[in-house]
Image (cartoon, rainbow, N blue to C red; front, top):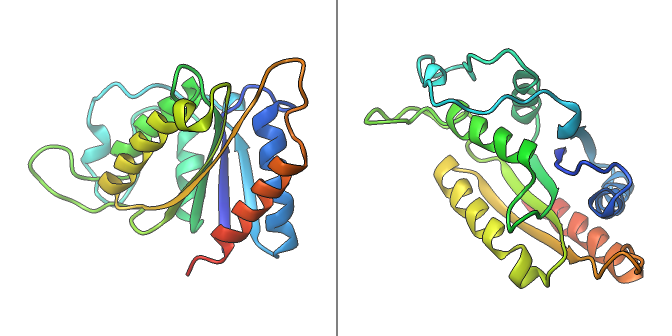
Length: 192
């Protein structure tokens, strides 16, 4: 099983990175192949609704010449996509949102009346989230949006790992969160 982790945090030593590191350590221990990409290191132009991606149903087909084509290729080569992001204003970070907008059209060839294929149909999508509120109040809206995104894109929603940061004067990654991240990795690896 190959996992592709899209890191949406601007901080490589932040909470989302720490939680994802425990998850990745467990994937490695399980013998799973994985690759990560930091979205803040990539040039990701926003979607401008030009519909160039809808002209060829066999390719991504976006008019932008940025780093998204490489991300598209890596997604096609994996079985499970993991979106790892802190929650800002009840949603993911800006580069992840820009990428999701581009992928929903470039991967799904059904804008308008004609119904083409979903190029990533059947792939799993999982979420790793950190937030300042309790997860049921901090990550719930993004999770609901991503469940709808999966249904629309014909992806298999594989679940969420959401952990709360209680503030700057606390240690985020404690033993309990580390265990949760490792159990989440195991649960994904156990899926058929």
